[in-house]
Image (cartoon, rainbow, N blue to C red; front, top):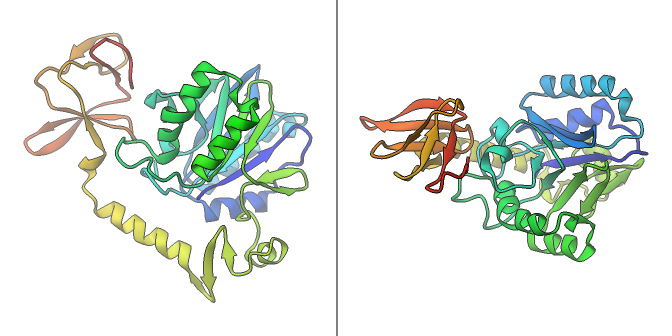
Length: 301
């Protein structure tokens, strides 16, 4: 389900214990977005709490505790797509897979998501959020850069996805979709940043975290996650590969030397941005972060 933590220019910073609980409950990777020199910085792929909190503290030092600055933090729990650095949030609003999975970006706008979008993230190599951004939000953004200032459009996204979203633009302004908890001015998309007993009392979800029931010491959500992880581990890794068309072209090392796919049997892994060649009934790694062009020589990944 994930959690979004959003600080606007005037609100307080999240406490370290709040971040620790948020990461523990949503521990499939974390990321940040903020504005620097008129650009939204996307900085993600922190898969361990130690690296996540270290980065958080370094940002506080660099940006003077974000006084008069916005900061958005996202902790992910995977529901579609593998638990990789590239699948953590935030994301740019684009249909470019390479950018959606890039860990460090400078953009005009960034977005994070909390929820599960049914019908997305099942067959494209993208998770549900990435696919929805590329297929639904990006076409809107491409034709209407300020779409997030329109209440009807934002309401439409909420109704379609049943989810919570936060957008940060390059003017350092935050825009929200869905209901957030306001705790001292700081916005949380759910209560997994609180201790179990406190959140149950304060927000009226006794025995429940974000819609999942708990009975005594039995943690249903944790058990379901363990089960899904076991299923993921057993699945054939090849299902995540995407076959390249013979008329596609590849810049293997990003040096401008382009080769046509032709008769070679190339497969691309969206999650890791690795290129494989299928030889002797096995996938052989041939390049990391290649640039792939379609039949019109337009960069697609």
